[in-house]
Image (tube, rainbow, N blue to C red):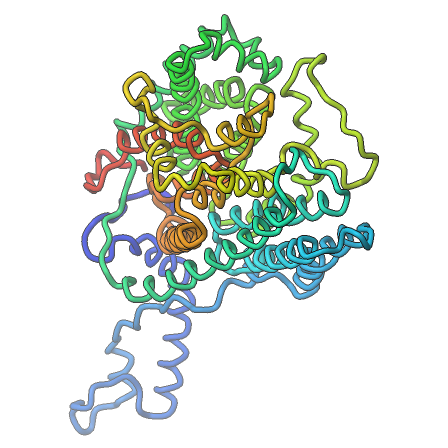
Length: 553
């Protein structure tokens, strides 16, 4: 039997983005369509008016003519209803919704004392329930929405449940230097950002329907350039490992790695170390993702040593340079989610398990992974003995830092009107050339607060509000919601169902979904460095010309 995952692929031209989906459906549904056509033909023949032209000569047996004349049946239409396993049963869906929207938020809120149930408390409870409802919708949807799903997972845990627990326990990861009114304003703006994101996603639905019939060029991976990326990944990771004297330091503490990278002390040396680490980690991850998809989608590739051996080497390299011990936990989340969604590109079970299990992991496991950050002498113990203790750690300071940023702006510094965003976009320009280049938002606010550790978060809400105020924040999140929904829809149309091993969309969207944790947590200036390196790597391997001998098979 011929392997359906191999063979020529169509690319480019009119409707090229949907050709793999049509081919897959026709291959799988052709036997059903043929059976239906035979039944219809038999029924028509038995009734005496079969599939015979109207100009059959008089006296000719119409049944015999029907047996000789065979009209091709119409192509099988892609069903609008999803596959049965794509729909979660009611026995599982109802408890999931109730748990995320009501049980968990109310269980946290029920531990509060009457004196803390002020406007901030009720606003945060409403924000948590809203995020829980949207996360439930992402889990229960029949179409996998990777980016929106991870966005709402972050929002539910980091901007919903965690701040609610901090209000209930009256403990915050970082001090709140402003008034209670600033905290109330921050929570209200977070909820407004949620609504703006949903409005943008809703607007994208109408735009997608209007543009659905437009032909789109299909981005594919060029085979020769992919091997160049593999060589670049090996070289960049080897240079990073050699600069540390071997792989052993990568299994120590994250603090030691950071101290080694920033040993120069100057800003230019820090930029150089960031590029060294970026080129040592990002190409290795991207090459691994592309080779993984190639092996998953092509049986022929699984029999070729020229594919399997480089993939095995990249697995080993990523285990060294991208492990959870020596890397920030948010970066390891990026690696884990990207690999999971790439290795299981069409599994609704894996998608739902990642989102639903992510809530439990974020609350129970994620904060305790901080033990790898410091050496033994640098680890700090928390003071609270409550079961909500993990939620008051530094990992979930997003809402608190938003409130502190509001206080920072109100202190007289004012909004930056795009300077912060421009500094993030042109991260590669050294400060020796650009003297007015802005600092990280978290560093800037943390220094103003008098904090010793200024490695503080600055969520996307904060970045947009610091630059453009409340209206600019709402508009920016509306655009983010529009872009996320559009990308998810394109992924569902081409990347998700495509059988092409070289489909770039099927690799990029899982990577964006994983990296959205870092983009949402902020600061953006820290996050854009790896984005720039990833864009360069994608530009190296991507082609829009469907040359058969250069495609992955």
